[in-house]
Image (cartoon, rainbow, N blue to C red):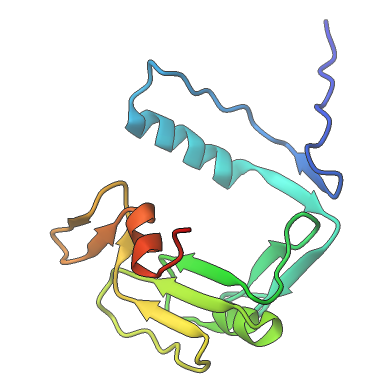
Length: 153
């Protein structure tokens, strides 16, 4: 029986823990590829030398890996897609790092996020095509989202 040797970490400051394998092939449907990739993203765990909590410990906060080559410094843009009414994470990014934070939420409910002039709220979401849902949600592709905000360069 062969022992599995863990792969070398691609980045020296980040270590993958319990990384599951992902199977992608040209024979798979686009939907199947997206589902496999999403499952990989939600199951992976990483250890990061510079892990920072932005927002509260409970709801409203997220851990962010800021080890090189990742990090936040002015000028910076952060996209938050599909967020809830809690704005502590957005506030922390704009106040601590001075980043412009673009919040995308297709639900028409009002988000109270104008604590900083660096926070920009958009009432549409992200999808694989420009569309409207039966719920009345407007979605656009990532490319169109970048174009609409002048971030496609």
